[in-house]
Every structure is written in structure tokens, then in C-alpha cells.
Length: 111
Image 1 (tube, rainbow, N blue to C red):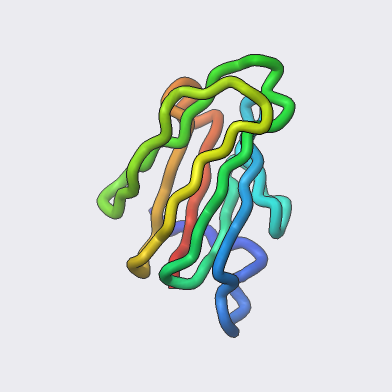
Image 2 (image 1 turned 45 degrees about the vertical axis):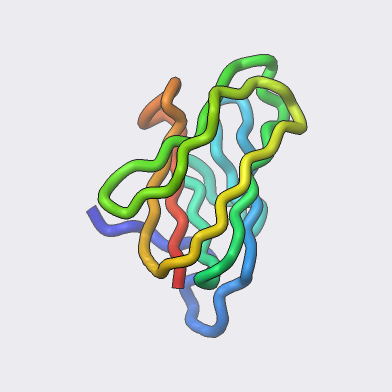
């Protein structure tokens, strides 16, 4: 399945960082507002920060999926908690919440 690209797909230089909110059963891009899937494009060497907000105490994770992988987060429920990954190689990285599966998904496109 081809990854859908969000508001960063128009060419030009990809930003060096992205922020994704982890809410009550939602991943939401801080850049373009896309959600489930949250889709962000960053430059190689860039960082993505996931921040737990308005989770209502519900536990969530960031779990890498597919052939191009990154390190998974631990299970977290506290608002204000963060998880960061530096993406050094170009590729398309898909992720979900290990607890909620297909209900919470996202894609990071690294150029």
C-alpha cells in the first residue's frame, strides 16, 4: 500500500522536525492536522517528537510497522510524556499504537 503524503508533498525542502500529538485514540500531525493516519514529511537526519496530550489516562505506544523500522516506545499514559526518534535514512516509516492497532496510525516520510 502506498503511503499517502500530507501537506509536505509539494516539493521543496522537507522540514528537519515534526511533532505528533498522541491523544485519546488519535495520532495527529502538528504540522498539517492529518490524523489516523497522521502523515508527516521530514528531512533525513530530522527528529519526530510524539507528545501525549488529552489521553484521559488511556495507555498508548508508538510501534514501528513494515519493512523500514525504527525503535518502538514503551507503553505510556501520562499527558506531557514524549517520545523522540531521529530518522537518519530516507524512506517511508509506518507506525501504529500497539494497544489500538489500526484505530491509531501514522506515516513518516523521510527525504
